[in-house]
Length: 299
Image (cartoon, rainbow, N blue to C red):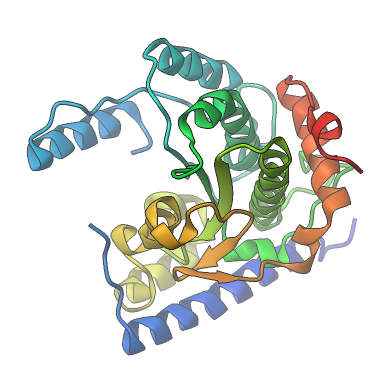
């Protein structure tokens, strides 16, 4: 194993981060960020309380779902389906970033398991409700949050769990690349079925959240000194996701990568349909669901 194997991904990720924060600084200086109108149970309940207070409505609920556990995901879907609610939009936004090597409850590398496989399973288990909810005039929408780091990500189909050479940065970038490939293949599946559901993927930019708790100490120091100027606030980081979920101009539009509320090109490899299908097939095996791609999409 080369000494550069774990170092090169880190260099690529931090280089990409510099490009993104400079882009954000330009965006902030020229246009500003216009805001549109918890990932744990305690935070979720507190969010529900605030929403009820601010909107004066009681029609808000919190259901717990741990994306690091296939059992928890299946239990969440079971509880949600019991309520017979429609599902107009699903925003896949959970994640961990650049963490030490560790595994989920199901034995998956944690970044690949939480950031990608958890969302893959959750989305597939909710597709039937999304399809029932969508209509010709009002499509249901799946919005998946990726990252600009997908541009430097490499998908190792022979070692998706990064067992042979673990790099926190490389594993993070791979999980974000997988999300883009998944979103594009999902859109192809939905379109081939004639479903009134669209799937898009967004890049929120570099946002000031607690995702940075496991990064290198020097990165934390730089963040603490520059985040007010260079980083987006959580509200600003949510803008593109909300835009993808509700914008009228995106009605019926899927298979797009959005950044700063604009459709842009993702990395060239994300348009590789053969790679999309390979990843989808392997993901189905890992989470234990049928692969219907070959039955629906002609090769």
